[in-house]
Image (cartoon, rainbow over all chains, first blue to last red; front, side, top):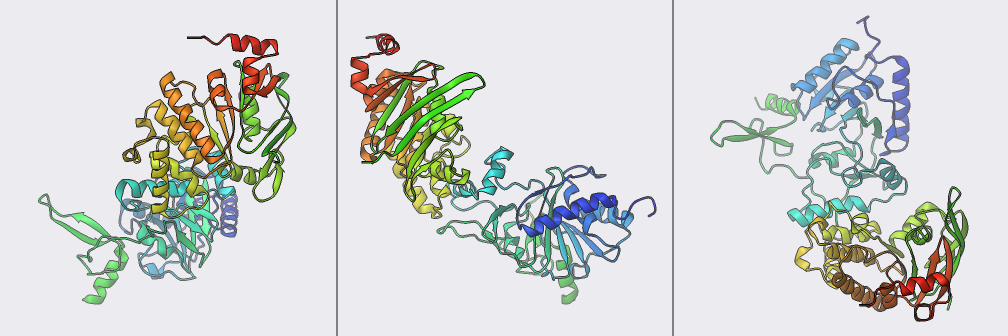
Length: 276
Length: 256
């Protein structure tokens, strides 16, 4: 423990990140540039989320990490171990126990409370990026609220697939102002973003932080005649029988066998405990 | 009748070199003005200054906005100018690729301006895009094809549809027929002439092709070395050129 400063980053760096976080909270949905550091893991593995977590963790916190909803996948295990080692904080797999939850691509099924912080790992923070390659231009578009282009993407979806086929990283508008990429969470999770917990988004490679204060209004973009739909597989969980949770499809053999299970492992385990 | 666009003393310098100097004119509603001259004479610089793509070093460009009457677009705030450029203005580039989103379908290209001004009904956007593709003579069943799959002439017509869909009042065109073969040019000109008359558009057309202005323009400005050397009614300038350069220009046209 003595080898590292608390939570790996030095205090000046954490202060710099906290300033970016506070600015992000003050302007919900606005992408705040920050001086992202090299972390001892490759870009794309959650370097942004890790830096945000490092900046908000205190010794009293209980930390949970999920990757696609699961606590026991490589990314989640590595990051959890990283903070166990460098910050010596308590860790948990139970959503309700955690005070800081770092997540990759999911929001936990259990409703979060005002005492919790949800930290997202973000690969590409700019929702307009694939339509407009110029950063100068996209920043201008955000500044001037020129968001027509975002609907062009949805239009293309409908004209090609007959429905809005964007299933993850579904663009949202924050408090009627900034259009934001919610990170690649399934659009099933979009309605959950109006929550009691603080939500922080960190993109390490792209050097951006953005944030949502509690109870911020989050509206998923859509057309009048093609309204937003929070979709999931039309099945129940093959393990716990949940009808309301987001499901992963697992291939079980090479003969077409498949089953659907909750992507949120903690939620599924809790429900199994209640059944037996 | 009051002018739609009033340009006074527009000058633009690139360091010590002259882009265009002391250009003034009025453009009235429904009028089409041609700007001709050789390459490097400052035509495109002038057009970009008028359309707000370049900031002129001196001068004012007054535009009769719907809401607030005459406004100087040079001094206007950037959001207001960008709003103008996607509502009351349209800009047709010489190369369709500069004016189109090549990765977006034809329908999406036409619909973009509608969505940019707040259209949020897919059915209505699609219907309007279909209507406009038809008006510019692009087969309606190609609405979901990307512009990359279109011929040069079709791309240019698509660019025109994309620009006119919000019903602008002023269209800037930079060599709209450049790089197209003559039969396609003729069709495009015919189409443009029809649309300009039908929608009572005002237009400023930059070209080096005198046939284009003969067909489309009511009035003509001849530019050389950044200066306007002659201006007047199209027929008058082309049939009875006064300035030496205009005489040279007119006599340079090949007679078939």
